[in-house]
Image 1: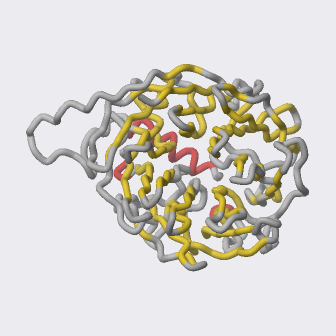
Image 2: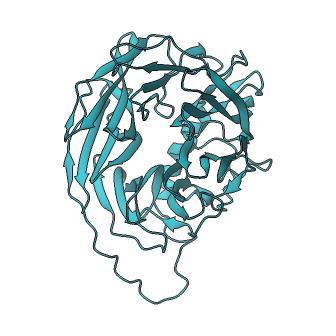
Image 3: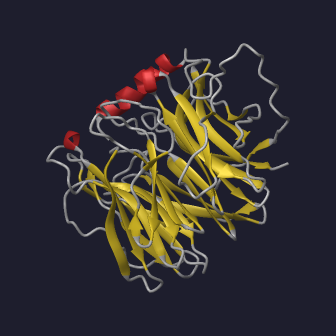
Length: 414
């Protein structure tokens, strides 16, 4: 990430603190709003088995439970570790791989996921050229619960010294692994010349690569991606980048082996000349989808969500998530009744707070619940649902001070 992207995010904070209206779901009459429906959960602190100097947590789910992965530093190396939560307890931490030559970023973090047959899959990012912010993707799989791992696999074959990252992995509807990522093979010679595309790759069950293709030719250069599987195929979400630098959230669907034209989720019309480092989140249950995202239009930081009942072809009204102002860093999980739990980082009282609330497609919202009000929340907090439990994780502390630590919490659904 270039400096301008981080500076923009920091400038947004004081500007966002005063935002209150001008939102897609702002009331148009003076009639007092109805009280939010009762919905509450008790959040219990429960850290994963991460060590000191840990960061970059990510959550995935399977029929066995929730996997949390993170990066842990032990100079000069970083190690990718994970643990699995099942039967109400975390397993001991397991190391996937480690190196002193990885590209490490709070925004673009590795992932570990479990497939339906029990195979574990992980990805990470070896650096190619730090000056160019160039790095590659490596994949590996384990058939024995993480005791041993395959030789690293490269899903892209352009051999350019450019960025390949922001991976979202998923299991293909027909079996095997699928993934989307941001790919800079068409960019210029300097990081600021970024011309990023969204790429797709797939592997069959014998780990033979079956696809490497563009899903969208011009996207925002450093915003996270998200992908889910529906009965009608894969849906991927990303921050688009128009010729006029409008950077709103779009989705594309994999139908009959080809990616559809991008479909906008909501027309925020956010024009910005630099990447906000703030991507979308998706969750799916059958044909129902929910998307969450951040926008900073008019220098007002706000978080939103919207529902789709037709596998991402059309989207409902945008639902405001934050209470006063948001730094974004959203996540979302659908519930069995068709509602969803959305999370975001609120900026209130001059500090960052990790919050959540329940929402539904009608626009009904519960009161927000603070998961942690620690002002040192950093990175990209995550939420995952397994059965009747919500699992939360985030990074706390400062990388510059060497005090970063992955934290966690759980909550039982009512």
